[in-house]
Structures are given as structure tokens and as C-alpha cells.
Length: 275
Image (cartoon, rainbow, N blue to C red):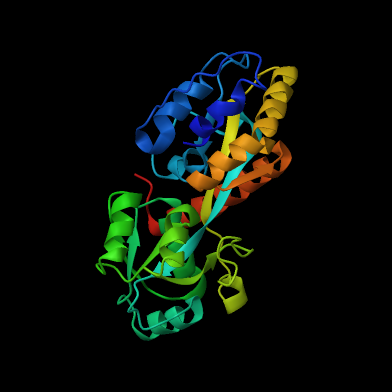
């Protein structure tokens, strides 16, 4: 959706037409593998959320590693909002954690699937703060949201693009932002860190190229994508689609991916998730 939203302005900045090819499956690893095994000439660019790099390698065997790709830039980053059903007996993360500690395993957490960043973020809360949740996989982000709205689970770590509209419309409670900064769309909701429970969990999207792509091609792609992100016409599209546009250069993005890869590798090992 992110790149499709850019298509309206890409022709202004890229020297050749961009063709978007969706490659679903394997938690994003099928498309990632194909893109990273392509000829490193700058004509094949992978745009994906960071799951194939920070979680999937620890859940299954993949055919790529850190030496097989180069990050061009970060395109988007959105935090998760820890949301609760309207009648939950707590109003923020602090109260929820106190309730969870007093009632081990009673809080039902709706997660999209085992091994997702949302699941691992909640698992990190369990490990860091000695609480026990009851994780309930829902089979995707859509069913996860439906389960929370229907009261079938007590809380759910929804991305800001999914959870933000539910919070502003009063359909769910926002217990806190799972990031180190507040979310601009609902600025009155504090972060978990402000409430004594620091946790970072969200989704970041980046552009990647196969390792060995000529530096001048990488720079051209970086500059073209950055101009798309800055284009006012794209801003209007991004706002309607809640794309969470947030530029960061390759140096920041590489360090960020490495940080979360280390975090999720440790959590996956502790949970025994590697198949």
C-alpha cells in the first residue's frame, strides 16, 4: 500500500517507470528472497515491513542474511497502541500491568499471529516485568481488531494505523503508546515508558536492494524515494491511508533493524519459537 500510494508521484522523480509486484507468503520471506537474489543493478528494489529481517529468520530457515542486502532508507514507521475493550477494568498500561500481576494468565491478548512483532512486543513485557498474559492468535490483523471490538479478547497491540481510528471514535480504550514518543494523532495518550513500562513495538517500512548494488544507483534510489516522501501530493494520499510516513537515512535504519533483530532473536529463543 505504501508504494502504491507513491505511484502518483514516482514518475516525477524516478528515471524509469516503477512496476509494483506483490509477492505474499511466508511472512514476507518469499518476496524478500526473490528480491535479494536478483541481479544487483538497481532495477530491483524491495519495499517491505521489517518482519522478514527482525522476526522471520528466528522462526524459520531463510535463504538470506544481513550480508545479502543494503538498506536504502526508511520510508515509514508507526508505533503500536496497546488498546483495550471499552469495559476493561483498567484505563492505562500501569493499571493493566497491576491487574495482570494480580491475575496471572487472565488478561487475554489478541495477537495477529505467533512470532509477529506485536506478539514479541507483548512477550517482551512478560519477560521484562514478570507478568503472564494469555496470548490468543487471531490469524491476522483484521481478525485481531474484530476480536477486540467484539470483546473476545481484553487487549490487543494494534498498529497506530489500525488502532488510532478506533481510539478517536471511542470504540476502544488506548492504554498507552508502545514507543518512546507519543503518537501525534492522539497526543493525550502517554507512552508506556511514561507510565513505568518502557516498551517499543511497531512497524517500520524500508527500501532495500541486493548487496553489491553500485553506490551511485543506491544514491539515486534514495534521493528519488526521499523526494516522493516530501511531495505534497503524496502527503495527501499518505494522510488518507494512515501510512505513517517517516524518513530516516540508511545509517539510522540499519542500526534500528539490527537493534530489533537482536531483541527479537533473544525473545524468540526464550520462547522456543524456532521451528
